[in-house]
Amino acid sequence: MKKKVLGRGLKALIPEESQENLKDSIKDIEIEKIFPNPHQPRTVFNEEELSELAESIKEFGIIQPIIVRSRGKSGFELIAGERRLKAAKIAGFTRVPCIVRDAKDSDSILMALVENIHRVNLNPIEEAKAYEALMEDSSITHEDVAAKIKKSRSYVTNIIRLLKLPLEVQDLVVSGKITIGQVRPLIGLSKSQALVITESILKKGLSSREVENAVKRLHSPGKEKKSKPSAGAEIQEIKEELQKIFGTKVHLNYNKGHGNIVINYYSDEDLNRILDILLKIK
Image 1 (spheres, rainbow, N blue to C red):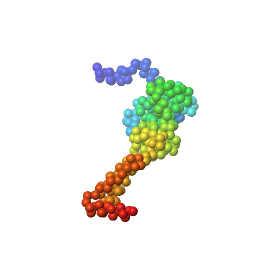
Image 2 (cartoon, rainbow, N blue to C red):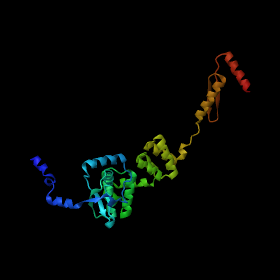
Image 3 (cartoon, one colour):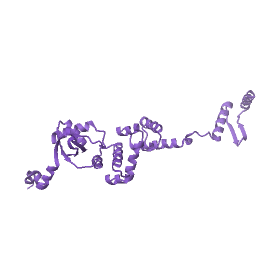
Image 4 (cartoon, rainbow, N blue to C red):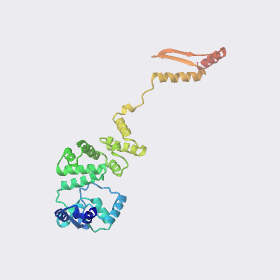
């Protein structure tokens, strides 16, 4: 029975009416007629992963269609599936299966964003820029974005705040050389301050907690000044110096500007030696 069902192929799983609708909605479109989405959130692609996907596409084809929207005579604009499209080009394909959607700019941004988030393909900076573009295009709030992508408002807000970092720091996050945990405490610092601490992160491998402490020191520089030695420490230094001079045990009692010095001796010869030293000092 199982063999018979499998032998019937797609018809055994999808009614004929649904198959016709599916067939009508997917079109083979020439790759040359598909141009990039200007709102594509993802900007960094792993070449090794693309090559692996291209090999898979050569063997099995493109299983999941690419989503595009019509731009009239000029062709089609990519909405989602740029990684599959790039891999298809590498694999030598000239046409790819596409679903043509009637989508506004905001819908296009959202679909591209959601696809990448679901695939965990975006780095934090790409994600932040996508949220910002979505808000600017649709005039919506952080809460609205959070509702659309099924994330918390605080998550969206914290990601967007990363765009306040200097571009040099953002680039390091994109390249994976530093993490958002390490750079998050730098938000709000001047560019020069942020770059100085970033240099320390790269050289010393500072943890996020160590970065937080470095930022606190910037905000409270007075706390980092060396405190003056205590009176007890100074008295101890004087006592040790006197013991070196006299070659014997010395007691130094100090009490706010007055006290006494006791020099121990253990024989008449020892006393005469100490007296000679005192006379020479005089």
